[in-house]
Length: 108
Image (cartoon, rainbow, N blue to C red):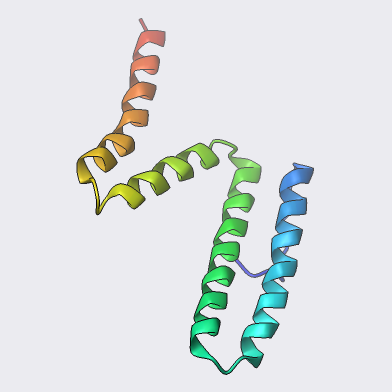
């Protein structure tokens, strides 16, 4: 998401975080263009990507607050995918199964 297309937020905290992230993105972008060293540039590009992705998450969270829990759960599962794929699978499916049980009990 480009920082030039500013979304409207209903929650002040999300708006402030988005503005802060956008300011940092602008600074990092300017510095990255001026640097000749590739390793430093690579690190800055990674930081820019992380902040841009977080801003996208904030935009969605403004409309769907549950997205943080979902995002954190999926991120944990992806981080475990290489080292412990069984546990990663559990994390991915556990929340779905828990919600299904709650939904099934509510309809009884």
